[in-house]
Image 1 (cartoon, rainbow, N blue to C red):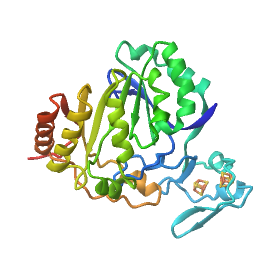
Image 2: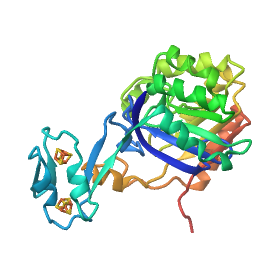
Image 3: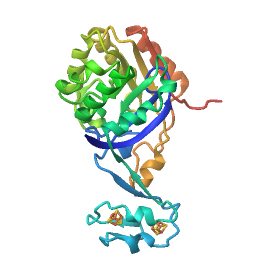
Image 4: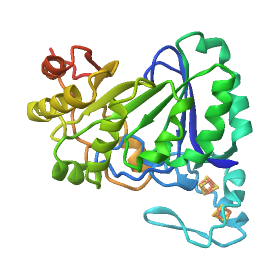
Length: 306
Ligand code: SF4
Ligand code: SF4
């Protein structure tokens, strides 16, 4: 079985306990306005032209068997004739055409993940992220079975917007769920993510009744979207009522490092001028969260204050 993998990030310390390898799948069913990985949204491979690297030699045009490449004042344009042969990528002397997404089989990825056994130790392991990793459930099912048989700790980072049965099948092979709860009210959730949150909450309630896997709730603290006291209190009440046995509630501060990714995609990021959250604000929101769940913590970069 094969699927599109966006990236394999080694030595990660932000996606679960210990030192981990995080696998990012391509493809997501949500459209967060603040999304930090815009290259993970599409399910297929994508090519990006990196203007700053291009030396205008036009070798890419010459080798393209489909005559799919043209250049205009906005830079390289690739038409729908492209058959993804990647001759242009190979011909480019400046590495100015980047490919996001690689088809990798379950067996090959499993072999890759085994290479990192030396730093997984007892707590570390493999985390699946995205995009939405759970949308690749058939692939994950095969891979996670192998990882569990090899005694490797597994975690899934998920937004929860899919039928519960899809995730349920993976739970016997999952040690930790990093489950996102971002915005409590439905209309606001829909405005910022493109979908309402009924399914996400319903899945959370079912997960809250389980003894295993362990669950960490993650709430990104995004300026103007999730960073108000009312939202944290509403989420806190929900978690206290329906998910009292979670191991951790992590408030993750917004980071503004994705501007370049959007620029390469030819998109404008809604948050390109947004500032980091102040440390005092993160501490204040965490204190509120701790009224509901003492195990609430915060993480991430904050605004430099003098
Ligand atoms: S081959 Fe590379 S450097 Fe040359 S025009 Fe194409 S993208 Fe630019
Ligand atoms: S991938 Fe192949 S078909 Fe597509 S633009 Fe490049 S050379 Fe042309």
